Structures are given as C-alpha cells and as structure tokens.
Length: 306
Figure 1 (cartoon, rainbow, N blue to C red):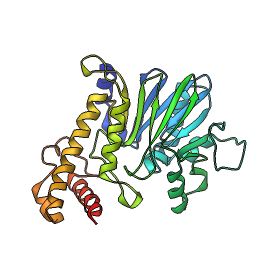
Figure 2: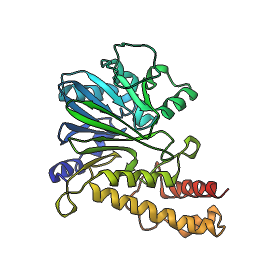
Figure 3: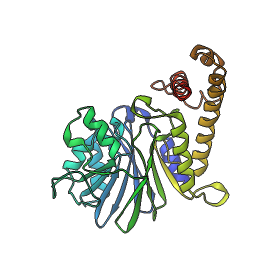
C-alpha cells in the first residue's frame, strides 16, 4: 500500500463528510479516488478523456464534477456502474450530461451519436432500472451480457467482470490493468458488513465469489504489502491482504450461520448465537448492523435449502 495515501484517508474529517464534502487522492498510475458520504468514485484520466466508475448520489453530482474538473480538463467519456444502487448510479444522469459520448461496445441504445457520455453496466442493471421506472436519462446506454467485457482507453485496458448473484444480479468489478487498480463497488466495503439484496438477485455466496474474483486479479507486493490497489465501495484504499481478511470474515460468518440453518435453527436462535461477535467492533455501521447482516445471510441460506 501507499502508506501516505492510507494515512491521509484515515484522518479525513468525518464532520466534513457529513456535510457532503469530498476528498480526492491519487491511487496509482492514471487512477484517482474520490471519497465522500455517498461512497467512493474511481476516476481514470488521460488524453482521450475521463472514465468514471460509480457516481455517488445525485445530490453530490455538482461536487463530484467539480473534483473531476480539477483532475482533468478533458470531458467525461465513459461512466461505468458497478450496479444500479443510488450510491453507485444516482448521479449518472448529471455526469453523463456533462460529458461527451463515444460508442465503444455494441449497445441496445439506438440513438447513435449523442452529446452525453456513455453509461456502461451489465444488462441486468438496465433491466432493473427500467422495471423500477427510474428516469431514462440515468439508464445504461452501453451494456454487456457476458462474463466480462473490455475497452481500451487512455492507453490502458479496462476490464469489466460480471459478478452474478452478489449484491444484485448485475454487479461489475472494474480492473484498470496498466495502473493495477481494481474498483470493487459495494461487494467490498471497508466500513460495513457486505450488503446484498436477494430480491434483486443477490446472495451471500455471490458476495464471497466476488471477493474471490478480486483476489484472483490482485497481486500483492513485497511482504504482502502494496501491489494491486483495491478501491472499495466505501472506506479506505486497500490491498490484496485487506480483501483476503474481509473475505475470510464473511466466509466464517456465513459458515457459522449455514451450520445452524442445516440443523434447522430458527432466525432467533441464530441471532442469539451472535455469529458476528468477533467482528462487530470493526463494523459499527448503524445503517447496516451485524443483526441486519445475520438476518440477510440467514434468509439467503434458507432460500438455498428450499
């Protein structure tokens, strides 16, 4: 890890975040990270324009655009959504309107040339956004439906990996190969137990598969420090070891709950066993507590048994 970057992020004023302020850090290569109350935004800059991964909520779009403008005078070309949640996609329409469109993959969007930047995501994200009747200007204009997709921009290969049944059925991990940076989205959250929505095709097993996919891509540096940098959906810059520790935590909790589910335990019995007891102090997130996570895992595993 770049220790200075981590230390800078650790001392960010949380009061400022509560007011909607953002903080920007260089990651490595041509990639930067914007940290804020709505989550993390990844920005790649270069001679061809700007690539953005996840937009944060619409209420922060003006500030996100201001920070991107400080990083590059080039227009936003591509906006990649790791899924369709508000923290990932809420500002997509405003950022796209501020950008300039260049078609790079086959798309179901019939409009041809457009003044807006392309919004890219897995096809399932488009399906769920249309079903939810979200405003059409926030919909993905360039979609993929395969296990992975790639584009080459700013002298760098950018790979999109579909992670099915993770937070939702449309999650994407983004790998900037030359910069050696992974934008993980909400599958990896340094501030919280992972969130997933079974109603949107998510599952605890899919979360673990997604974390394992990140570990397949990431290469640690000397003494397991540094190497590939992972930008989580929320929280500080991380490396391969951080992801491995997080994966192990999720797996241990999943296995504890699965053992009880296999024996016919009720949700209340599982709660009383406190399967997250070793980790609750690490993730004191009141928006997504250990009890909420336990219930979600229980329902996910119970669904598998039916």
